[in-house]
Image (cartoon, rainbow, N blue to C red; front, side, top):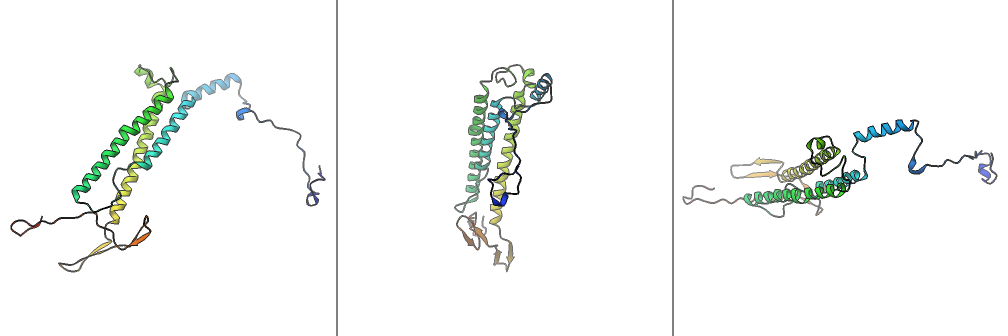
Amino acid sequence: MKNSKIGFLYKKVDIPLNNRIKIVSEYGKVDSPLKKNEFKKRLNQIKLKTLYVKEEILNVISDININCSDIIDKVDVFVNKYEKIFKLEDYKQIQSTSMNNMNGTLTEMWVEKLIHIITDKLETIGKGWFNLFESNKESYEFSKLKKLLTRIKYMMQDTIFKFANRSLNEFVTNIELLLPEKIELISSIEVKNVWNRFENVEEKITIEYPSPLFVVELLENKEHEKFY
């Protein structure tokens, strides 16, 4: 059918009228070719296989995923930013302190937070697949609660691997930046270190060579013969 109100350029365009109005069903539901009893049977089969049968479970996994993502970016195994030159013992001490702080963050803050999320979201479910107060070991072994906790365990392991791997790579990179590209032995009393020019991204400057990481003290013995 031609519509005379379209305008001069579109006079020859045929615009079909669609008298059939499609009503979208609530929640996007569609008619299933399955019979009612068959549909319920298949739905029950799916429920037996999946964890996602209650809204609380989705909330648990979502909140734990958010907390795991925060840990990946915030926790470090090593100290990777050096603001001064260290004695070797002092350097060992700050790295040991960093590892102790990491351990405290994981065991006292992170794990406790995850426990709170699980208990807070699931305590209202009561008896059934996700019963937190299940005392029968055999029932627990076949419950969805065990499957959920197993999944959370894998999420935690993956989180620890990711932040440890990131921190280790940063540590290696920072140490490599302190190493010369090559060492030239000019004579028995003259050694030349050849450095690559690199950029200090934070201060936006180019540095010919980095500051040393360690300071070494040479002490002469009483016989004035050796240094140690």
